[in-house]
Every structure is written in C-alpha cells, then in structure tokens.
Length: 236
Image (cartoon, rainbow, N blue to C red; front, side, top):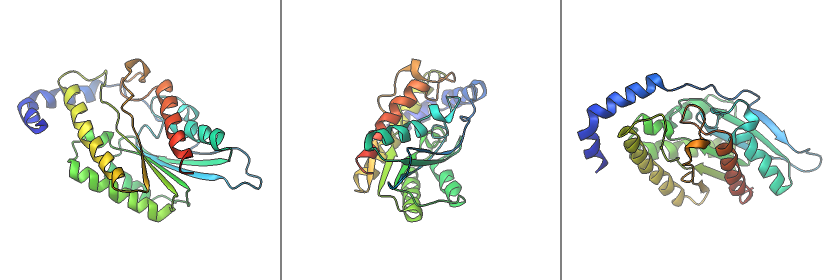
C-alpha cells in the first residue's frame, strides 16, 4: 500500500525531500573522547561495551559525548551492575547499515562483552528496500559477533519520524517507511535468541529534539540511555 502512495505522491515527496535537505540545520557530532571507563577495575573485570551506529551513536544533538546515549548508558550500566564498564563507540553521521559494515571492517576492534547497534535512519531516508535492509543488518551483526564475541547484543529500533523540520506529506511517508524497516528489525531480533530489542516508539515529544528538529536532544538521549542500560544489565 505504501508503494501506491509513494507513486502517487512522488513529485511532491521528491520536491519536499530536496528542500528539507537544503534547509535543515546540520549539527556536528558531539565533542569528546570515543572511549571511556566508569568505575575502577581493581580485581573486578570490567564489562567491555562496543557501540556501533550513525549520528545518534556519535552524539549529534548534544555538545559533548558525556551527554549522549553511549556514555550515559555505560554510566547507568555501571551503577546498576556495580561493575566497571569500559566503553567504545564507532559511528559516523550519515551511515546506512551497509556503510557501517564497511566502517567496522576497517576498524581495529577489541573483544567486547556487550554489543549495542543503532542504525536504520539513513536506510529510511535513502529508501533502502526492506529485504535488503534486513539482509544488511543481519550481515553486520554476524560480522561483529565473529569479530568481538559479545555475550549480549542489543538492537535499537527506529524512532518515529515525526520530524518537526519536515513538511507533510513527506513526514507521514517517512514515518510509515520507518515503521516498515522497524518491523524488519523486530523480526530479525525475534528470530535470533542472541539479540535483544530496545524500542524507540516512545520518542515522540518534539520539545525533546535537538535544534535541528531531527536528532535527539539531552532529555531524549538520557531516557534512551536508561533503556539501553536496563536491557544491557540483563545480558551483562
């Protein structure tokens, strides 16, 4: 059904997408180190957490990495399990899932106890076909599991695309397409007992978005971090 709407609305969608790209505020990735540790090790072995993703993993929408999802979730996990947590992020703005596979294949990866992946937004905006997206994501997970041997893998869902910077009907169409790809993520997780899913369906409050009307702001990153940490505690 969505294909019929896309065909009917194609001239409008193309025009609105081009205008949105040209006028949207482009925010930088968060400043600060992309590795860190919470808690002293001593005789306790630290939980090693690897985060892989696009602009949200890179912290676009906040100024410093300590305000982003990655560092905050690692901190919350440390507080929850009372063990040191060493974290690292590998991310870049604009990555599709296929791009992420290329990025991590060129990275020097250490073994990790926990793998957290957040991708798909750029697959939505680039209109990656659902079957291809599912295959890309499965291939990326298999590659990373082989490289870092995690005990737990967390797959973050796609957020609602109620982008304040995007006009209708493009906003409706992008949101509908995002739901299609998110459904494929849910199916991927349901078919693999190694994976856990964190939903972002709750992220609908425009006031919690960054100044670009697209990326999470501080409050949204903090809420997301708590959900990831809660999920991570169950597999760490």
